Length: 352
Ligand SMILES: C[S@@+](CC[C@H](N)C(=O)[O-])C[C@H]1O[C@@H](n2cnc3c(N)ncnc32)[C@H](O)[C@@H]1O
Image (cartoon, rainbow, N blue to C red; front, side):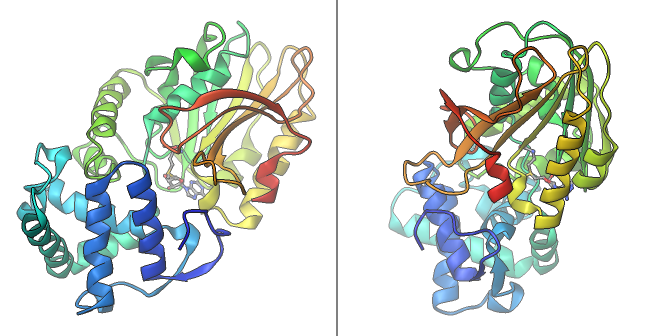
């Protein structure tokens, strides 16, 4: 399957989904994550000992490859799959040297799935909850364009809400055009909010980092420490319900932010969120402005290898006309994103 993202409601087989995820991990510089997926692909193409444990048909947007990687990583993090953990770079392990060592490790991956069917099922049924704080640099880039008025940060599908602390997380000078406004409120929702202060929350969040991405692992560890000092108000709610409950606050810019979540939503939820934002936009004034900032997969045209776009729409503030402006492009996780300036005619999320 080519790396271009298929329409996200496309029904695909497990092997197709895993092959897509393997190509994506390979192209993103994660050979061990790709090798983990190869272990499962090779089994499903040959002995098929794990075939009965994993459903064969998936919607593309379910990303079963990500779910399986996380289930195996979690077992390694909990030291319940010691042979897998041995070569996990996120646990200080070294990449197997040579084909034979790699084959032994891949056999351990398959064995780990066989040994822990309940945990694997739990992982497969769990919507991926990566909370990637590399994306905070995109939100910061957008916030740096808002001027000095205080900001209320609102995040849809926030996972553990780590990016609601964006102003306390590392930024990228290339993406920021001025000082960040002060943040006076931080609120968010998720269907299954994670408490980053608990060991379970920390393990779950860590499991969604790809097993050889030590840079992301370190970034997450830092963000978890920051989260302990900066409280947020995170509620368990569907994103559309939550968006429909939002109001504006005079004296502050309300910033509605979301990242890497659109693909998980059904068409009705997407339409309701966009309609809720339009309804709020119609109530804005110069003292109660609104910004909608998203870092999501572009609907088409990933051939240049930069599938994500940072798009901002603004209402209420001087010269804000609600038109979507692409202000950065890059890879899903955030680092390496670069600024662009492209005015669009319509909100591309309406087409995804
Ligand atoms: C891949 S994570 C992204 C988390 C975060 N936005 C980030 O960029 O790090 C997607 C999140 O969306 C949440 N989610 C999916 N559908 C949702 C819905 N309808 N309402 C609220 N949260 C939802 C999941 O629980 C998960 O935490």
